[in-house]
Length: 175
Image (tube, rainbow, N blue to C red; front, top):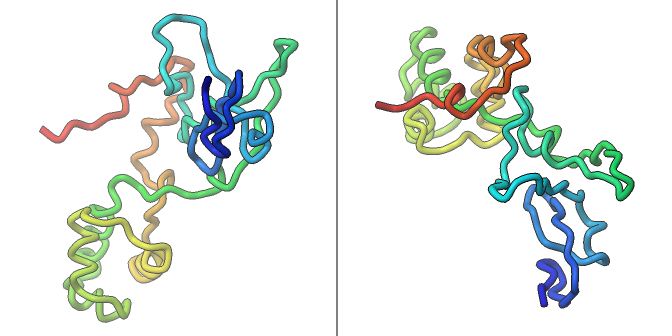
């Protein structure tokens, strides 16, 4: 008999529920702590990930709407992750380019931000993500945005066509 992943109770039927960004199999008592995830069982090769969204929003927000038992769908509840801004995938290049455009060395930038030069080196190599405080300092000092969706490169996302974007259209290979 399956167990609830939150309370451990053995129940006959569990519901897939998103709780703070994680999808869990929960019992009736625990499913109120999150948002019910709609499961699609139209084919035998169903996957966990949705490919039906071509917007720049996260795929989890478009694939996890709940459906009622009568077949009609209702809009899923918003959670704290819907409002979070994601750090851009090319944040390291943005930081390095902006620093070089201002004529600053890594040590000079670190001094002006009251941070260590090793932190700037790690950020520019892409070894670590900036904390929220460091991200704000960098954005203010360098006059850039490190969040996803604020770059000029996003014109490829809003092509205006109704075709479905596939993973191959989005991924950039590092050959």
